[in-house]
Length: 89
Picture (tube, rainbow, N blue to C red):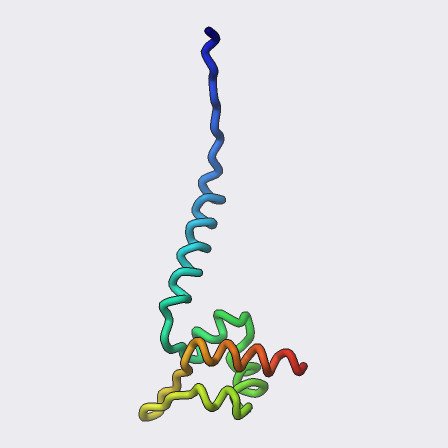
C-alpha cells in the first residue's frame, strides 16, 4: 500500500477576510437601529450625500426615531426604503 501525502497551503489573510465578512453579515441581521455614521459606512456614501439625497424622502423619514437631538433609523425598514428610493434614480 502506498502512503499518500497531502499538503495544504493556507492563506491567513484570505481566511481572516472571509471570517470577518461572515461575521459582518451575521451582525447585520442583529442590528435594530442605525445612526447616520453607520448608514454612511454601510452604504459607502458620504454623510452629506445621504443627508441631501435620502433623508428628505418621506419613506426614509418614516423609519426615523428621534430623542433630543439624536436621530436613528429602524434598520430593516430603512433598507427597503433605500432600495425604493435608489431604484428611482
